[in-house]
Length: 114
Length: 109
Image 1: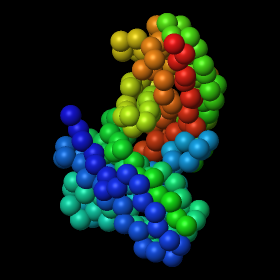
Image 2: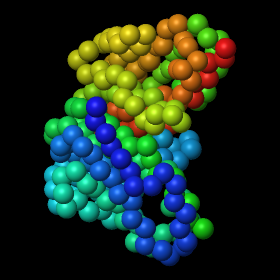
Image 3: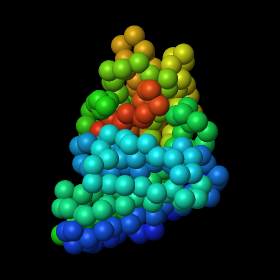
Image 4: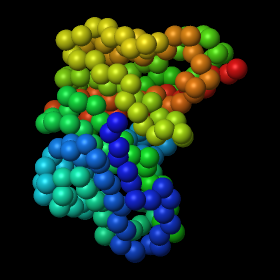
């Protein structure tokens, strides 16, 4: 089974702090994704990566950056956390190019910014 | 990008009944995927239907796709308590996945 793990299930940070969310997948998938999930809005794509050191902006990249130094690891960085970034953050990975394949999700990190 | 729309937002049925959820979208798609999310297992892929397919089955799940109406439906037959979850459709269009807001399904014992 594919396993996608995220560094924390729950995180509380203060406004202005730099926040790192880590994601690791163990199936040698090319594609990795970061989403945020808010009630009534479904999932919104923040960034994705289709290869090491490659990244593409999603729908809502403002206030976020990402890093993919190794194929199995994709990090999401909140440069200066704000209260409107309080949300559930989901990491996913998928095999192959494009989106013809299913995505495998981590358990999520619920981030609260106070 | 535009979200897909799911209908209904919430659905509550008796165990053993069938549950139907609908998804509509606005752009042309390559495929459409359905996912389930519950507190125990997170988001899990259920089924993928390609744009040239009209119907697909997986166990108690049946998915239909009508590209002329830009809509899909997910039918769960003989529902069980373990089916209680939120269900999301996700449309693959132009190398992005466009997600619906989800249908919350509650199965009453």
